Image 1 (cartoon, rainbow, N blue to C red):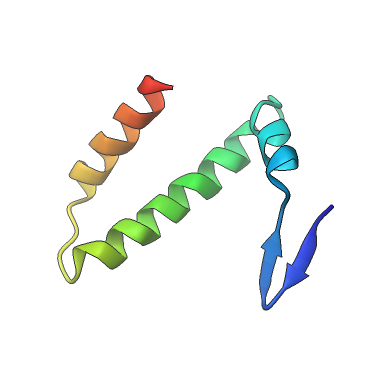
Image 2: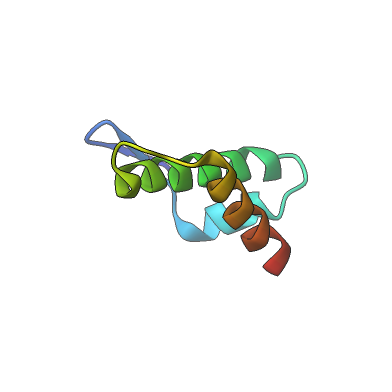
Length: 65
């Protein structure tokens, strides 16, 4: 089910999707996805990062689902 490998925790996509649709775990999954998106945006942005732009894109993605 869960696997710890090279200082990372791997979760099968089936379990991830199940937890994403569970009211109890939904916020945790969304927080992890937001953190991933934020880290990727920071990496792509270089030195300057506009949080408002990131938040606007995130909110658009959430409402498009």
